[in-house]
Image (tube, rainbow, N blue to C red; front, side, top):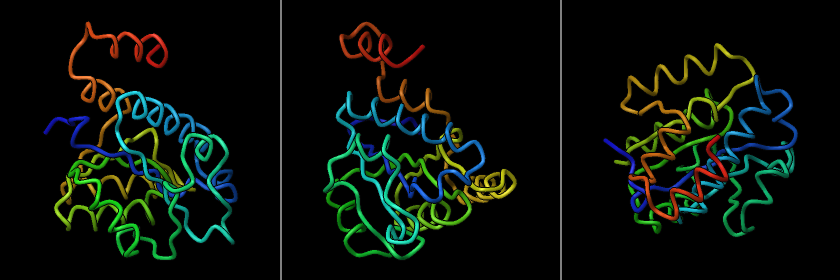
Length: 181
């Protein structure tokens, strides 16, 4: 199923200051996540971020944090964001059933959140170049398992162009000029 900007939201999972340096290709995960956050902003796609135990793992890295309002950064203790009542409620209030996921770690918090979202009836899209783990093999296994469970593995441009839907609009020209190179 194609992504629709009016039915989607972007979920940024735990891209935090003390964990990010240990992530395999971590700077790429951060850059690609920020790229998608900018596209989402341009297309009015809501963006929610989570932080796993920020007292221990740190807050969201500055490039992520500066792109969000504080009210859209939600703290959690469970690995699955959906196990936190406040987060579950916030996502439900969006009234959108397609969730695009970026973040870390692919085999822990991303995996458990995506699995719970699938079980709750959401359509889940994982952006391959914007999710990461400390070990490349852990990411590979998580994406393989999530795909078997029904998640879609996509690239950032698939998301952007599906959200855009067509060329020739002012929004298309602006997004292509500023973000797609």
